[in-house]
Image 1 (cartoon, rainbow, N blue to C red):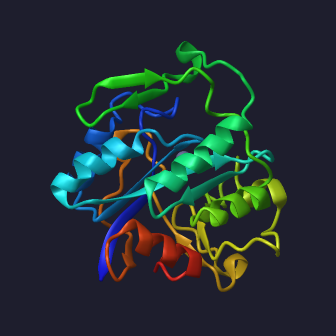
Image 2: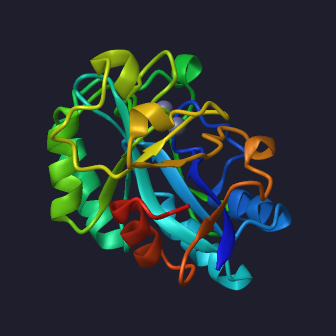
Length: 234
Ligand SMILES: [Zn+2]
Ligand SMILES: [Zn+2]
């Protein structure tokens, strides 16, 4: 099955995410745009995933549980899981290693946990942006150990990317899929790894049109994680 996807979307839990990026609004916009699979990937946090999955059930949209981790080298990397529980456990590990820096909402933006009816459940106080967890190889091991997969984010961007910070793909990294920003052809660098392209949307209108389609046997988080692990999500 060829399915249109957008696997990198920030909700209002990310300080830089627009407050209108509630889980319900994201899901309904994805439905309007006729996407089949999306992922909510907030910075170092995941608590808006359950509300998105709850709303998505009504529309038959698949929401993959995810998070965009900032490693201790300041590399952004996406981690996806077949279910919410292992993601929550993974984010607890991230929380346990985070610096206790309080958010300044007037500078960085609010960090809102929202339910399926758009009600604010909590405002996270510790700033979610700084690096945590460990280096990229440690983050990958922790994701794999919980049944997930790590996909380095926007590897060709000038900031917070694997290539900008490390210069090349470390040979011991197991990731078989990398996120590429824009339309640049990185196949000489990627070798036999696959590229996935997503919106990195922080506002509703930036969520992708149904332009990036992938092959999946079924639209389930488990199938998406499997395909990302194998590098066959093309
Ligand atoms: Zn990023
Ligand atoms: Zn992002």
